[in-house]
Length: 380
Image (tube, rainbow, N blue to C red; front, side, top):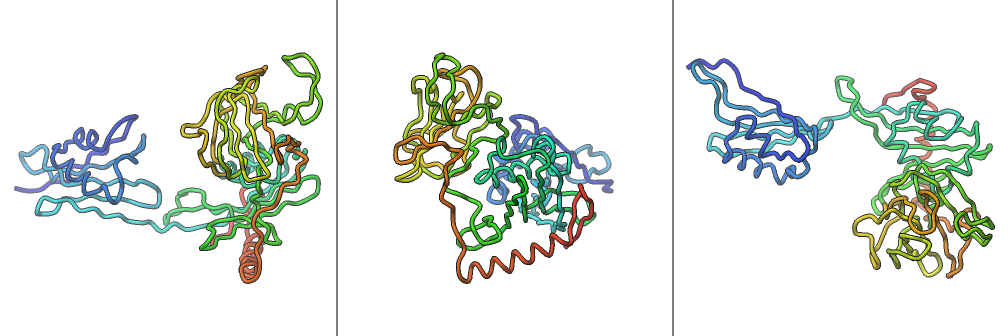
């Protein structure tokens, strides 16, 4: 019989779909589909299937007088960087081939002036939302994004942009350098990677960007009430308001301000849904009026800095959705905005020398690269 062509049917995963359903719907018999999925499991677990994923299912070549053939495999791209192909062998078993694509990197420098907020200005300049979220989290140990930023403050970011061999855009990569100039004073951070500590960011003197506690434990909030005396909006009398309120839409994620242990997670009078975290023998933080807690966050659990612990709400004595945030020092409430927090790791000796070399290399790449806002892009 004369072969005409392979029969390839591309199927797209919908909500709740499984590999088995997709392969069978494309024409595979259930037994072969089960064997193929089993062969793939060690390379790519089928539960990682995402909505919208396309899978090309191959049946044996169509021949004269035969409309459909035997299921002989499938292939798909779980990411822009890799491809997975599952093929039937002559003995009927299936083999899996995983191919990594080489992505080419370009340094892209995105800079500009802040007119309303860092988020709006950096987005307009070309910084993608996911990279911008990483940038805000990176700087939030030093910057209160509602109070510290003024009109005409500056930002400057160098980030990798990855593309395929044919030039098609693949994805955004690492933040290599970030600078924020607040009222003329620069904050500069350089990416540094080591075997013992992984990826970290340091200022030009080798001091870690990561402090003991984040100044802003919430993303995208607007500072609505500062520490000090105020008239309580519900109780109607003046008392010391020992904390800072961040007004934000209901459901906005709240981060743990530092590494520590949850010592309270539940209802607490006028605080409503309330979490308290002990960071060490000296510092604790508290978060009030939450809509709810992140699954798994309960008394006795360890949390890490930047981990989502709950969501903005308006429980307890509250006139609207906001986070009430407190810092306790030796058991006493302190003003989070005025607190001088201890710094994180500081590089020394040979590690500081190695960082200095990497910083110099990044400075050279900064000189060579300008991005979409001022638009020169340098390949490497």
